[in-house]
Image (cartoon, rainbow, N blue to C red; front, side, top):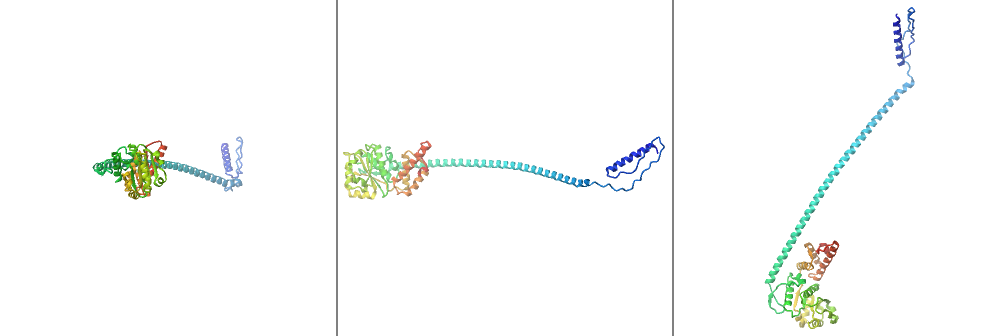
Length: 406
């Protein structure tokens, strides 16, 4: 064998030995003999390699490392899965929050839009209702104005064509109308029967100024008629029928107890006697003499219950001639009282709508029918509340509201 061949085989054997070492196999016992090229070739002997060799024993540490590596790999895989799951959960949660925020924003936007629409509709309905109320109020006011104008025309027609008997002369004369100066009596002008009595009395007094101007105001039991007497007294002064604006009011029983010297300051004015049917005949005769133009020159106005005064005059015929003018109040009913209220409110310089007069009308149920004093007192209270309210509001419209009637 050539030397090169021997070297090649030796290297091959060495490489196989190294491979076995990596595989954990025992090293072969073969021996390689290197010969000198100069020497004569000698045969190389090899120990025979067994056909089957037992694997080298695996160290205990290597046996334990394999399951440990599996555990580490399993833990790593589990950790990676957990992290992936947590990441997905976070991503899902973020997406859910984003979607919820978007849904909430859309809901809020939708609710706000709905509220805006509802508010716009409510405002529109309110404005429409205000407009309708204004139209109804204007229509009602126009109708009331037309009704008043029709009533005034009818009154004018009735008064121009109607005739009455003059209380002084007994002559038939046109009814006529109240003088413009009789401001305080205007509210009675449209009342059935009562209005005629007032017109007749004033026109006759103006026509027969030399006759006694004394007035008798007749009402039912429980009527309050003093206010009517006051309106006559004020109208007498505004018309120049009396010289003084002084008005004295006294109850019959009180008058019976006093001396007439206490009336000396009343000269030229008017004396109103309440419940006049209770005054003693002697005292009334004394009053008539005291009120004559030669004495204190004042007008006597008797107010009271019709039956009581009728009986009084029947029993004292000597004083009948001093009381020519009779004003019948007892026939005023609910409708007439509302008419009276409208006239009084206008007289005082105020305005009121129909609901206010409905309030006044409802209040009549708690009063004696035809009690003018209580009725006027109630209206005065409403006017006072109106003044207080408007003073606080800083205006002076003189417009009575329904709340003023409570």
